[in-house]
Amino acid sequence: MRGYRLCDILPGSADEADLGASPSFDLAWDGHRVLATVEASRVRIASADGQPWQALFPALEVALRRLPVRRVALEGHLVALDAAGRPSFDELSRMVEARDTKEALLVVWDLLHLDGEDMRDKPLVERRSRLAQLLKESRHQLVLSEPLSGDLDQVLASVRALGMRGIVARPKAAPYPTTDAWRSLACGAQAIAWARSLSPPPVVTNADKVLFPRDGYRKRDIVAYYRDVAPLLLPHMAGRPIVAQRWPDGIDDFTWYQHRVPPRRHAPDYLESIPIDGDRRLAVRDERSLLWLVNQAALTFHGWASRAEHLDEPDWAVIDLDPGEATSWETTIEIALAIRKLLELLELESVVKTSGQSGLHVLVPMAPGQTPQDAHDLARGVSIMIARLKPEAVALDAQTERRGRLFLDHMQHYVGKMLVLPYSLRAADGAPVSTPIAWEEVTPALRPGELTLASLRNRLDRVGDLAAPLLEGGVHLRGALARLRQSGALADA
Image 1: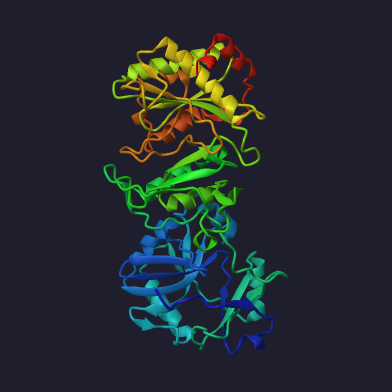
Image 2: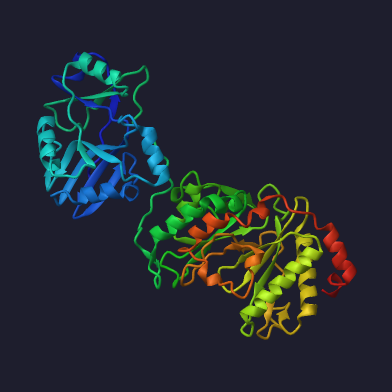
C-alpha cells in the first residue's frame, strides 16, 4: 500500500523522563520487523527496505487475506518460537532456510490504515483498541502484541528474567511517529539491532506465471526445482562462466541468452562475475545467485568446460550424440555403448547424461594441465573409430554428409564453448532435465523424456550425483591419444 513506511526505532535511555509522558511498553520481539498490507485481497509483507516476504510465508498470507477488511496496513514482526517458547530470530532464520514457515507468527503491534481511514494520526491507545477488535476473530498466526504492565524498572527486570532482548517504549497518547522515533531499551549492553537480514534466496516475483503452458508449470515450480537440485548443480557451476537461457513469456517464446552480469542497478550485489576480455561474464557460485537468475525466467544453464583460474584447461572432453531423422533409439543406444567400450579400451573413465532433448552426452573427465586441443583430439579420434565401425549409422559432418544419420559432434572443444550443465531444465514440453545416468541404464528401455522436473527428486534420493566424477580431478589423456594416433584414427581427420 503506497505511502506507508515503518518508522524509526532508536536506542533509548533507561530514564522514564526521556521516554515521554505515560509510555506504553511492548516486547522488542526477536523477529523480523515488517509492514503487512492487504488491498482488495492482494497481500504484501515487506521489510523496511521494501523486500517482499509473503511468498515465503504462505500461511500468514492466507491469514491476512481472511481479515474482515478490504484495505489494511499493519506493523508487526515475523516471529518463530524456539523449543522453550521464546521468540528466536535464529529459529526464524532456520524456518526460512528450510522453507518451512507454517509455524511462524505475525505479531502485530500497530495499525496504520483501516478500510480507507488513515490511523496514523490517532493516539496509540485508539490504534491498539481498533487493532484488538480487528484481530479477535483471526487465526492463531496473527497475534496481538499486548502491552507490558508495570513501570520501566519492573518491565525491564521481567523481560531480562525471561531471557528476552528488551522492550520498546511508545507514548500512549501520541500518533504514529512521523518525526520522533520510538525508543528501544536493551536488556544487555548492546543496542537492539532492528535491521537484521534473514538473507534468503530471492523471493519469487510473478510466481504464478505459467512458463510451460502444456504442463501448467509456473515460475514457482521452476524455482522450487532449482532450489531442490542446487546442492548437486552448484558444484558443476562454481567458478565456471555461465550462460543462462531466459524465457520470460514461457517456452513458446524464447527471448535471449544471457552471457554477462547486468549493470548493478539491475542486479543484486551478490551476483558475481568473471572478467574475460573486458566483459563481466556471468558466474553462479551460490543458491541465491542461481535463484535470482531463475526468477528472471532463466530455465536452462550452459557452462564453459573450464573454470576461471585456468580458462584454457578444460575439465572434460565431450562427444555429443545427436540423432538424425533416420536414427532409431536402438541405434543411438548401440553407438553410445560402442563409445563407452572404446573409452574403456583406452583406459578412460566416462560420464553419460541425457541432453534433455533427443540425444546423449558422453564426457571424459580431464586432469588439470591439458588443453582444448587435447580434448578435441580425443573426441575426434574416438568419433572417427566409431564411424569406421558404423558408417551406415554415423556421420561426422552435420552439414554435408549427415543424410538422417546420427551425428557425432566432436567439435565442442575451444575456449568458451558451452555445454548444457547436469540437472539443467530444457525448454520443452514435460520439462525434461539433462540428467546424468549410469551406464547400466543405457539400454533401449531408457526413456529420457521421463527424466523431468516432476520425477527427478525421487531419482536423486536414490542414486545421488552420477556426474560426480566430473568434479574429482579426471585423468591425463597422453596414453589414450598415443594409442589413437597409432591406430591411424587421428590421421584420418
